[in-house]
Image (cartoon, rainbow, N blue to C red; front, side, top):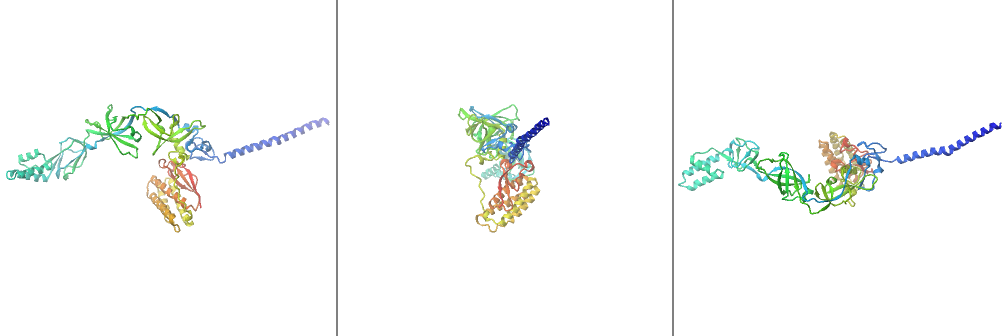
Length: 583
């Protein structure tokens, strides 16, 4: 019996130990795992995943970017407290093929060569018109087609002129009576000379005693026929042009020079050039004229040289490439930056500087002041220091991504410039607007949203119909009770809303409708901000890429981006900029 009790006591002790171990460790382990899972869930809750190259992409869980396929990253990984600094993952920088170079000081080369392009043009001063000196009918043409070469004195046409026949009769009669009245004969001669009849022709008429029924018209200048204005049988008035001629023995060669190169160009500088039409031959001339007016669209100035062209090898509209050897500015050493690093935006020059000693690639927006071009580089006046690293390839990708992320960029200058003037805000007239007015305005907004959806679908016909419906809603809005400045503001906005919606209704192309929709949206956003929205909350959304990166806004009743300026091409491009809360 005693032997049986000992194993029993041992078994009881083991069971008690296992139970205590479970209570001490098993429950704690379970609770710890549950706590860790809860913590992980709490960490992931509220996290936004985005694409470093396409910041407009927003997801609540990790995955791939629907645009480029890159792995999405947590937004906190690329957030920057400084709007001037844009951060990218190393993978994004590698895919964008970002390349940089060091800003350095370099010697200004004496006589830096400027590469120019241009074309041959006719010398405007050598143009002439061949005209009829006497009224009459064209009996015969000796020059009959455009492009024919004409020499001075060459016979152009035969003219039947009744006035000349009468003048010849008067001449022969005056010659017969010249012993009685010599002045009469001289007057008859002068009359024919007035019509450009030569002395030899007059003497021939007198000697033969016969009247010529037709007279030749001769060229007064040499050149190529650029336009034939008459045909056989035409009746021409005195002074009426018969042919237009252009003398091409000397031609102009006009080059396009960028405005930043103008400090290096002066009248008298030598230009050498060639054209594919005359292979193996180079021509040379000096700058004779610099256009005083800049081409505002291409940002170039025309510079001209004159070239002798006796053999006619150079023909108008031929393309040429030239080299102008410009004198140095006199500075021996200058801080320079590669031309490929510079982004031009109107009056500003922008570069992206790669910041050193950062955990992830970080690029800083920087406005710089540049001097003249030195070969393939620009002289830096202000904004950069020697040793800084600037982006020379991929800077457009950085700027576009920064703009979509609402950070400093060429188009988002207001963000980064301290002291920049804020955008003009719409006045607050909500107290002046009645509930009925706001409800009618809300009905117009609903019609606007249907118009927006039609543009998202790129459907011009539906957009036109919805624009008409919007116009009708706006015209029906009753502004009774609104007075003073509020009434004047409403009248201005109402006029803009109706004008642009009618333009959309009348436009046939979606591109034109979208342009007018931008103006319409601006007016409607200002109206809603001024008078309030009665029905619901609306969102002002922004596409930075619309209209060649000028950007455009629109109103939506949902936070989800559906871009009316691109449709399916870039449906999700845009961000929510502002919330218009219902009253």
